[in-house]
Length: 319
Image (cartoon, rainbow, N blue to C red; front, side):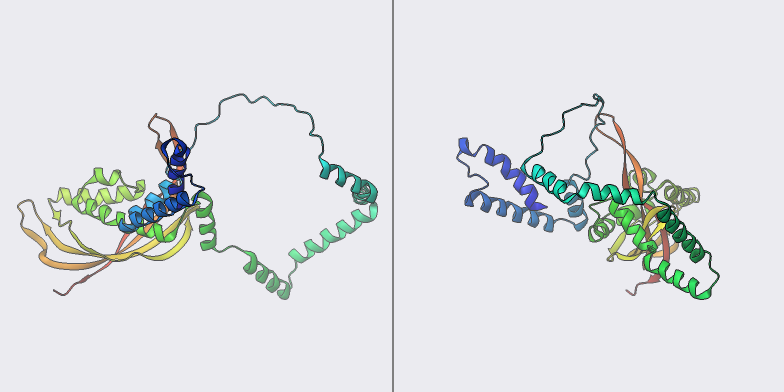
């Protein structure tokens, strides 16, 4: 990808190389410059946060761009003359005529209309119906084996739908983005910042659940320590379908301070040095989401959003 971006940049420079003295991209000097720019781009991405680098790669591939405006021009049908066959077309036409292929195809099509052919087709249909409605245990075993061989698994279906709707999907980059964004979501949740959560990719159902807990803290006058001291690697748990949409379930843990204060600053739960290792289940779902371009045009595009956030357990960390 970096090579493509670098090549595009040098292509523009090569176009004015004649006037400015630059080397053409087809020359050894131009190819060396493209390779050097590609290495620089890869180094730049390597020095970035893996989640930010994943977003940069997707943007370079054009996935973040809005779709083109719908065509509103003429829909008239243009009638053109049949193209004149070339040398190969004329040669193939002569071969078909000499071998009589057209006559053979016509005869085969004619056989389908005869009584023997119709009787054979009827017999085949009768045998198929008997096979499907048979009560034989052996037949049922064979049918179950065939279904297990050719039926797509739920995980396979989920991956297929993801590839269709998000052709640039890469699981490693996906988990890197989650590791980058999860601390931001948890921090906003622990601070009680509803506006910050609304600006993130969170489903409506999940946002309502988080808002309910934050409102409860607010009503009781409690403030949770929002600091996240450490964040583990993200691990893949499963990929499956939920409500006809693909769902990627991940797990991770982070170290948080279990300390809740009241309005006066008095600790009502935990302690300032009560560090807990908190384990979360994090589920992202690919769903259609509405976006708006700079010129006000709305469009729909598949986007990943947080569908489930479950606290699986807590364990005290020894000081």
